[in-house]
Length: 118
Length: 113
Image (tube, rainbow over all chains, first blue to last red; front, top):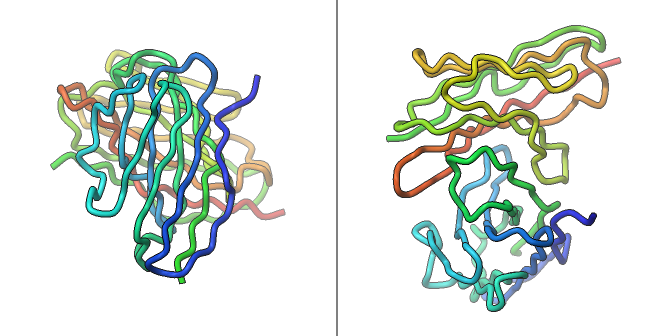
């Protein structure tokens, strides 16, 4: 079975340009997460979906970041316009149970998209 | 403030040696604690998940311990291999309505031949 799929793996853009990342979670997983990971740091949650509903977007910089998961399966994360400080790895993860971290359900991560903003 | 702190920041050991990584947390109310291994350029991979009632859990050469009273966890790696070179991240889930994962900054382990 395929794991969490993300594309592209790498993206280099100039500041003020838009960029989009795509994630396809493990088949059947209800909960999808987008994280940002800066070099040498742990991942930071940007948004969590349960099916197509964004249940936690409190850490998403809404002035420039947007996300969608229209059919409750794959998801896109967009930045417009990108800033230098957005350079990071953007990780997507999914879990099977609808959505409570107090469960011991394993969280599966994709390989990430490494974004470089010049 | 809910926090997860890991030590050391980085560690270098020789192949075949054992090592122990530490994780202290202030997350409350506590739900569970997870250890992840993250290879360079890859996403984190789950090693262990422990709930409040579990003191120890093993996954091959990896053994995690949890002391919920002192809010400390450790990850012990036995007979290290070159492939153990990675970052190890401790993650604590809070059991409040926000259901957040609190990530540590990780310990970067380098195993030398």
